[in-house]
Picture 1 (cartoon, rainbow, N blue to C red):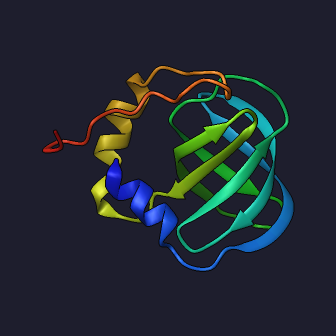
Picture 2 (cartoon, rainbow, N blue to C red):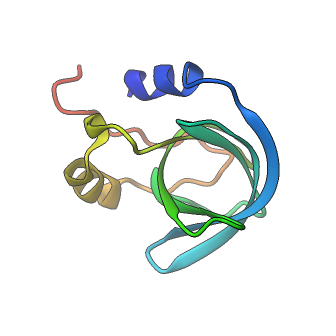
Length: 119
């Protein structure tokens, strides 16, 4: 997980976008505002205090593709995510651990599953 946080902090220049978006997981959709974006992640503002899982799909208004996201930090309704672009967070890890990760309200610390080989 430390690699994800490091990549979030060092993934390049962030562009302020202020576009509506939607977070989707398990048939649920939650609205958000994309505050900023870079090649490796984004800052989001959630519309509600709804519980969201550690991993989810993000769709940004005006774009036709979904981005797989992992939560790196959260503060009330604001969250920081990294995009799942790196094989370190491959789909087999997301399918097994993210499906089991507990959901938490935005104001609570997010559960962070350990990556294999990490102590």
